[in-house]
Length: 111
Length: 112
Image (cartoon, rainbow over all chains, first blue to last red; front, side, top):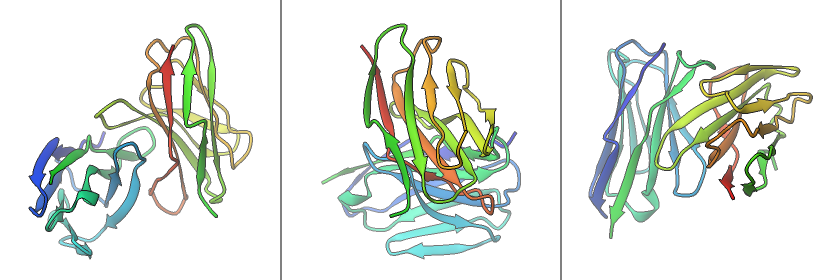
């Protein structure tokens, strides 16, 4: 089935520094989704990428889909305390229900 | 106000007891899902249902049961056979048009 590796597992940054999480697959992906889960909260859908080389921005967040559609990244510029949480990628294919979640990257921000 | 409602927010289970977690959605989604999340971990699929009166096992279905008698409702029962039930349980729904998941606020289950 579809496998997706998300790195790093944990990332500590100083407030104001940038942050990037990566999602990698050994096979070509049809699309990729990103979710954010605040501490104590539930995952919330952020964005879906479909096209090769696609780049989408949401304020300080930049999402990128690789040219080969085998990897994706989420970059946050100048982190703020509100960015704390776990960021998950999810890819179609694999899993019993056709969607496989990465294990997530925990973002910890030190003021 | 559309969304997914899970109840209760916190639940305590005594040993040997079955408990049922509620999940209701008014998004008119065909599909509903149950995930388990352990501290600091990712999401593991327990059961899912793509249509009323039908459901499928996920990756960790043992010790759990579900029903889907109505489109809006997908309750999860944690049975006494589940020996390590302490976790955060998330219900989600989704449209048949895409693979997006819309999550409820979750239920935290602990064992007394």
